[in-house]
Every structure is written in C-alpha cells, then in structure tokens.
Image 1 (cartoon, helix red, strand yellow):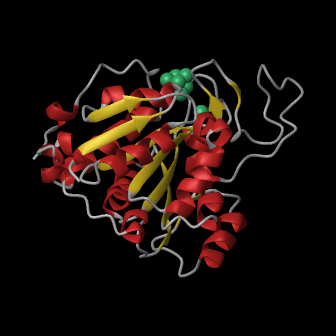
Image 2 (cartoon, rainbow, N blue to C red):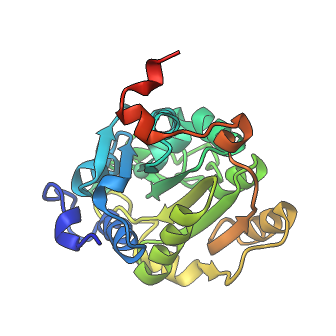
Length: 271
Ligand code: SF4
Ligand code: MG
C-alpha cells in the first residue's frame, strides 16, 4: 500500500493558504486509503496553478495543454484500461477552452474521474476574470465589473449525462476526500467540482465566503431533475454527491476487453 512519502512529487510552489494544497492532499489520501499503489494511477492535468498537481502527486502523469486534460485522459484510459485515471485542472482551463471536452466526456462516460480546482479566477496569470467569476466581479480585465454570468459546473455535468457528480470545498478536507474516493471508485465518468479559494487574487470567494454559504447534502438525489433543482435553488453553493447512476461505461458498450498481459507480451499487433 502506498504511503504519503511514495506519493510526494515536486515541492509545491503554490501560495501559502491556496486551496489547491488541500485538494492535492485529498487525492494522495484517497489513493492511500483505497489501498492503491502510485503506479496504478495516471494524473493528467491542464494549465494553470491547478495543472501542477500532476507533478506534485507522484503517479504516472502528464501535464498537458490548456483545456485539453480530458481528451488526453480519455485516451490514456482507452489505451490502458487497467489504470485509474484522474484528469485535473482549473475552472478557467476546464470550463473555458475545455468546456466542449467536458460536455462530451460527461455524455461519453469513460471510466475516469475529473477533479476541478474551482477558484473562480485565473490565478496563474495573476487574477483575470474566469468563466466561473461572478457577475459584477471586478478584476484587471473587468474593471467595470464582469458583464457575464458564470458557468454552472455541476448542473452542466448532471444535464449532460455524467454518471457521478459531486461538489466539495477545499476548506472541508474530510468531506472533500470522501467525495474524491467515491469518484475514484465509481465506474464511469465522475466529476468533482471543488471550491478552492485563491487567497492571492480572489478576495470575494474566500474560505469564509464558502463557510457561510454552503449547504451540504448527505445523499445523492434520486433523479437528475431533483439534483438540478437543488443546485439551482442554492445558486450552486452546495456540497455532497449530487447524482450517481450505474450505467455501462464506454468501454463496456464497445465490448472492449483489454488484456494488458498480451499487450505487454507484444501480442497486440498480431493478426
Ligand atoms: Fe493558489 Fe491563487 Fe496562488 Fe495560484 S495564485 S497558487 S490559485 S493562491
Ligand atoms: Mg481558476
């Protein structure tokens, strides 16, 4: 069984207090508590402060390009179904340029997890309005306040067929780790959106902002409609597993039974 030492990669360079530290710890803790070895995982990340997670958690990994963690991660899973695959990235990365991939990954239902570090801002490039920034949000790119309304991540994945949808808060590591563990063990596409305060550039969506507003749900809703209604009634400020469904994943639908042993023996290319 892996230890924390096994799973430690490069020394994080995130700002002290950044929510991403908790998410990294939650991923490491989940791998340990579920009894996996580091080599059984592949973490595929996008670009942004969040993208560094594939270097900070020591498993197989690939730091890809902006918004493209999902297509690469799906390819990794199709190429080696024995790997547990986690795609990870930020809100600007995944809900901006990567939004099309997100919707298609949700409906495709490949057996993998997508963990989004949602800080409602572009952190790495020093604080511009992101697709998750609130209406009216003032940054250096929206000096008169954001004129757009934010993407609703969990409603998007629920509405587009994801078979596991959860939301968590980096300030509640116990609940967040539980969501990550359940996502990893879910068979099919699992999406966990995690509110992860950027303490340096976002002075609105702080730890206190979330502590004062979040409503936790103890169990998933029975239907997608009920889950969507609850999320919207709380303006997206909810945590918990919101929806879960058992459904054949993409590879089962294709009837693929991948034999890693024969692949390793070089038999894959034989007629
Ligand atoms: Fe975290 Fe924001 Fe610092 Fe990036 S800029 S490491 S998101 S606190
Ligand atoms: Mg961001």
